Length: 133
Image (cartoon, rainbow, N blue to C red; front, side, top):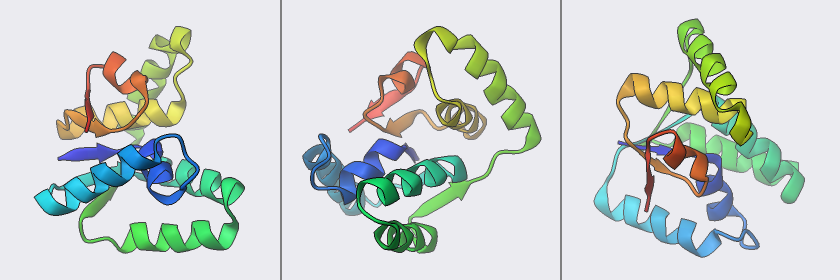
């Protein structure tokens, strides 16, 4: 299983994104390999907000619907316990200016024993996860 971070979505959908080519190659590889994927509702929130600002709201809403309807992607939602763990991580990684969304991702990944993140964010590697691809 691979956790999909905001950067992988932005790179896929925005041709001007600095990671566009790498993201498209990664998504193509995921499709070929049939890899199971997950993300979080926090990542979806962040992704749609940024897509709306960088493209437009209709584009973002269309991408959001496609993501929500995907059979290959599970959207995880944190429990209160996971949100508490994320707060602890948020404090722990304060010197690195890690977002709360990333901390929720880390806590969810630990809970689900997901070891790889389709991300371009070094914070995942610093938190002990393998960046993919």
